Length: 117
Image 1 (cartoon, rainbow, N blue to C red):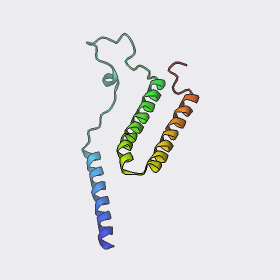
Image 2 (image 1 turned 60 degrees about the vertical axis):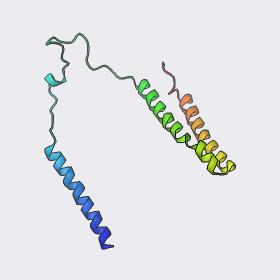
Image 3 (image 1 turned 90 degrees about the vertical axis):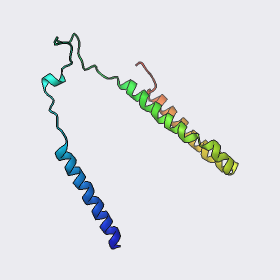
Image 4 (image 1 turned 30 degrees about the vertical axis):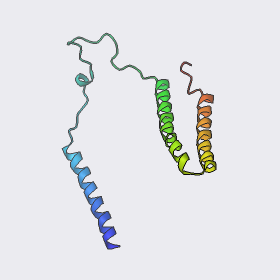
């Protein structure tokens, strides 16, 4: 018990020490007007350098990442099928796929998949 508590205390102390060292050593930059302006050979830019970001594009990208990770989770099920009983494999895989389809249906009904409004 004493060894465990000492290990926890040492790890906490080391992490706090590293956090303090990083905050002291880190270079802090201040954003002023000159640093925030784009560089165009000394001339003022013709248009805004900060273009608004489309939230619809962001949502589509997030949904793509989520479904991409879920496909990666499904890949090993082919190998697992050879090692387990067919009935248990079918139940687990179909449950996972039903959850995916329900999630896709929910996103479709909320209009997240619509590119233009």
